[in-house]
Image 1 (tube, rainbow, N blue to C red):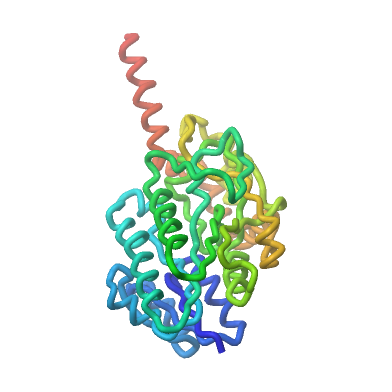
Image 2 (tube, rainbow, N blue to C red):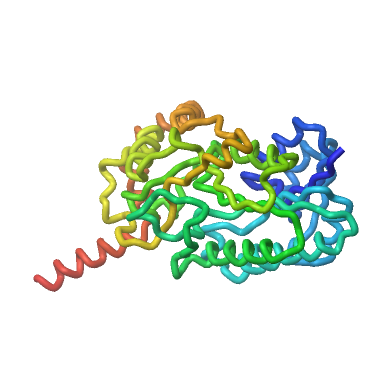
Length: 332
């Protein structure tokens, strides 16, 4: 029986992977930081998996976690927006934690394999050439520390003595992550995006465990052609589902210059190897409609208030209003 270590098991992708792995005949160990939220989630899994609480920044904790493991699925990371707010913490967890994972794995007598999740962010802005292949040059945006950290992690892994595979993940969607985040205003409306359902990511990572042909590869994990859309149309559909409406939101609320990321990711090879693309964009929209049916009613009733609440999260819109009022003041 294969013994699998899953880091970051109680995050979004981690939970999807854990649920999928529990369907297989694996001996599963999970490693995550002990927070009140993680403890609540872990309660339902404590009889099904071995849980090791620890800090990935601490070598001692990581060595304990990787002991006697066959395959490590390393998902644990600080992601935006927290990664933007606390870049030093993000670097310590993302880069420092990955270094600890590699060092601990290399010190084991038994040869271990590493599955690592990277990000589409490593390619940087792709507004003008949205079709991305794994061979494309890495060009992170100058202010995207998270992307730079993922690139550094990839380099560490490629230079290690481990057997490894690197999966660069697209924009992951989940019914458990439907909050209106300020990041929604950071993506230019003309950006091409390709979603992937978190359940499909969990399936891909689980299918990778025993696949003999993936090792030494860098592959994309994304939903496929049926999951592609422009960000403008995506927001139009999602805000319509929520009963808030998109048309009334001014374009000045969104980033207009280049400097974000996302695009259409080629996934022919990863799909052939892992057979994970099960959910389409329409499937996701349908699931969201069911999930937010009650919330939608109240949003429609209080639509102007909800739109104002959303716009208040956009620093672009605040800057636009400030400049607008300044111009009026100067004219008078």
